[in-house]
Image (cartoon, rainbow, N blue to C red; front, side, top):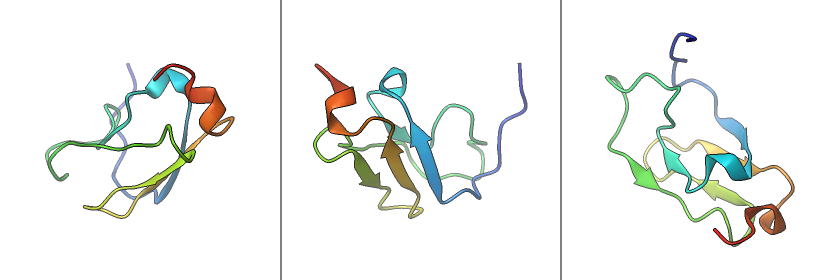
Length: 68
């Protein structure tokens, strides 16, 4: 198991396997993060977290979300 990553990256690429998308993500350190918020990335292929400003980009765009 890898160490949790610091919440310092501001652009993160995610895949359909990460859906439904929420911030912070499981690999981030949660003790210094904000409350979990679900992000609607399936419509445009991008989502911005309203708490920390992290920009999530869906690899393959909205069509990669499939039925999510």
